[in-house]
Length: 278
Image (cartoon, rainbow, N blue to C red):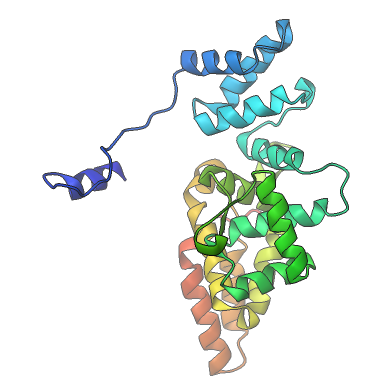
């Protein structure tokens, strides 16, 4: 929140490492100029159509402009372009991975779990164990998958002993979660995907055996995309019903306490109304 940052730093010295800059989307003219330059080797009407699509898709946000331009420059068919930025992010990830690899599906699953378990650190063994369990991987396979994802610039590995792993930029991480857990129906309305329903039902059913840090990371990520999803998608909320069932079906005080703890963690991420995928 810029107003909060300004209020906290007004009249002080050395509170910020660098001056505060107000960022804004690029203008239509700036977006068109950059897209045209990015596609300078694409000729004629195809280039014009591609530039129009890039400008419409990016809405002046440099990250989306970069992803859209890269997709076009690498030869994507203009008749089969993503219809929104969430699918654009999904396509970018799909095309960054080897098309003929036995590990491709597992790499995609690992990438998605790293995105939703943000912030991810190798030292948090429950996170490693959870990803390996959900992707049917060994620790050694998982380490190799992380290296492949890093080589393809889908994740960033950093920190002491390269212990931190993140999907960057954050907007790509958000889009990855949204495109994974939602889908468009025939009328163009976004609904919770079968994967989204399965994930949240899994959390609700198995919450007592899932490490707390795993639950916190996943629910925190769902909470993070809440505003984005609420504004643009009819969101992912099997969660409220699932948590309510977990609380009401508890057989004793211990189970009820565990379920209430889940409800407390889930509260910021509970989104409404729930729309199920058919």
